[in-house]
Image (cartoon, rainbow over all chains, first blue to last red):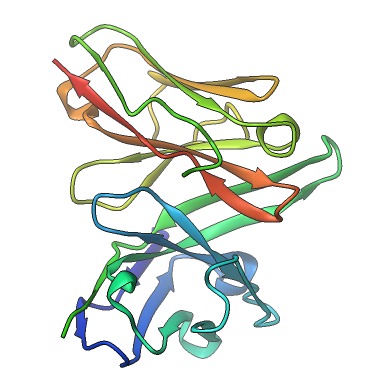
Length: 127
Length: 110
């Protein structure tokens, strides 16, 4: 079955870096984009952006440009999220999600849906 | 503050029907497909509806989606206690070129 398995929880000090992994299985990795979504404690979902698993080209939502980097290792069907210069406000659960993103020429609509999601990785930033 | 507006909470009795609304604008819901997600307590979100009204394999037909203009709706019939969760709508925002989510709606099955 299609599955995304993320790395375990992390506790980091402010200013440090963290790298979260997301290993895909059950499908051909390069046939879907991968997105990252943040959920701060008690809050809703916030889309961080996506990475093209064919080209490695990453697109970041406003607010996630600069300290956040998406990358891939296609040889092991794994996507990564690296966050540098961590701040307390980066404390959140980070999800990877297989993404179907694109423009439907028949309807003129953009589609954007996510299935499945990884189990989430809690990153805690605290001194 | 989320781009898409959802009621913070809804409630209904077991066996009843509940409707969750998601209000957007002409640059998001009005011109793009909507998806819906269920997040059970302590778990990752799960896709319930995509492209406004399609259900992925394994999602029961108690869950249905619709859209009219700049608003979308998720209907859940035959409510079960196991449906207690947070529900999120999402879509593409063509003016910002980003995916936007609603703030989420907490469903209580009383």
